[in-house]
Image (cartoon, rainbow, N blue to C red):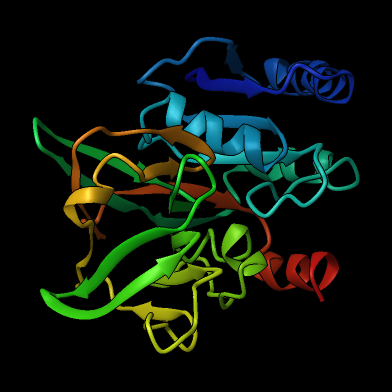
Length: 267
């Protein structure tokens, strides 16, 4: 029997470490090898922790094409299907190869500055904000059509899988995780005769490009937050958001788990 390799990503907490030991004792006799360091020829990426651990694993592995399998020891767990109650049942399904595979599309941000162009990808969301929590001014365009000149705390660009995170707290809509497309949600926008405002969040198709451009006197005032990680780009001219087909794969043992989880955690 060919040995299957599992890359292990884990939050160093007592509950997660206890589950790790249980998994090792269960899977190693079944012909699996557990690797604490990332191997690009592995069969699975196993993540033990909460959603933050899952996001960290995806970024740390540079958006690995190896499928991710999540075990939740956190609070919400919108990426992590398995918990203590379902762990052994789902480990058996993993051994037997009985599972579904979801494709989660990422969103790319092309950041153009006066000196360089950078690219970032998110699993949950990007947010454009002021580093000093002050009002940020910008122009929002879709497919090169200027829509609005906005002012406020910023803007969220979320993937469907990230729609239940920061986006939802800001008043955005919930999108099914495997939908193609993304969402734009303003952050505390100013509403007056002076400033334009979005009436709600906007859901865009995957073919759409969204551009956020900044006036000359604002080019050093905005920062980009990628899945919770802040970056301040000097000489910032514009940020273009798009879906390019870049994706990750996630293992699901129950095809209806999303609806059960949504009902349990949010409704």
